[in-house]
Picture (tube, helix red, strand yellow):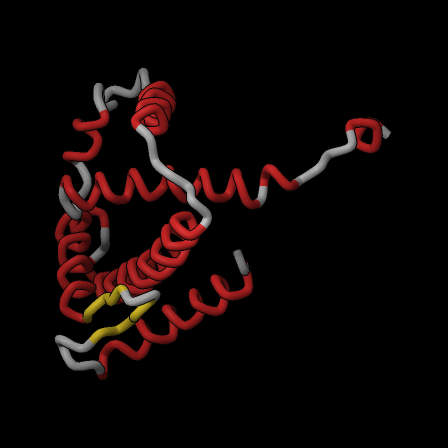
Length: 165
């Protein structure tokens, strides 16, 4: 996996979204490994996020928030597409055990909060972009973590003696 490629691609996403105001509504903003993000899809997601957070954003900051959400969504699309595709190339698979483990970890981390979800389904239903999108994001996050564990963390050798010195 080439981290430089991801960094350059992230910069490209920021540039594309900065240029968005000139784009045709149905034009593709980004195409990564054959997967496209259209202006229409991005605008719809930005509008959904703006609606879900409108009470938290001061009126004078709405336009800036809209631009920020657009940049973040484009960058997430780009990074997730690159990393999930890389995971597939490297043979990283998602199992039911992976899902159950991540769900248990998450539920443990939020236990005790007054509004804490009791199940993964409860959490996913709260996602502003919908249940299906939340499920995909949840599963992609597991795949990406497994890829990073396999390709980065597993290759780091720590000499306990050097750490102690």
